[in-house]
Image 1 (cartoon, rainbow, N blue to C red):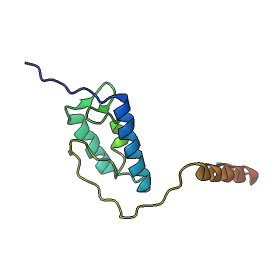
Image 2: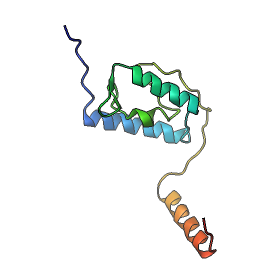
Image 3: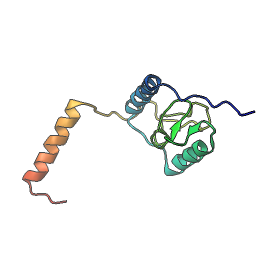
Image 4: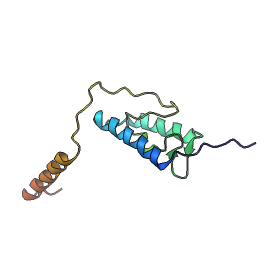
Amino acid sequence: MMSEQKKQPSMGQMLKNFASEVVEYAKAGAPHVSEKQYNYRLKTCNECPSLKRASMRCGECGCMIEHKAKWATSNCPSKKWPQVIIGKDGKKVKVGRPAAKKWRRDKKDNTKTGDKT
């Protein structure tokens, strides 16, 4: 008898999961795991029967594993990754218009001074 494979989460549920992950990631200052932790996470996902290989998405939450595995704030829904402890307060990040304005201003200033990269 064939084992029944779990159906991937709906698009709505995947968006909800992703939105929740992004909020936590940004609040913590957008921390990434080390290269060693990242490779371990990818290896663990690759060996997991829930992995949807055609899309390289987690069959439990629907996240794209190559991205989810990088974020230190992300956890495996099946609890197969060791938890990463992030600083209590995290690093503050600016998101939205003020950050975009600063980026445009900095870019404009660099072109005025004739910086060549």
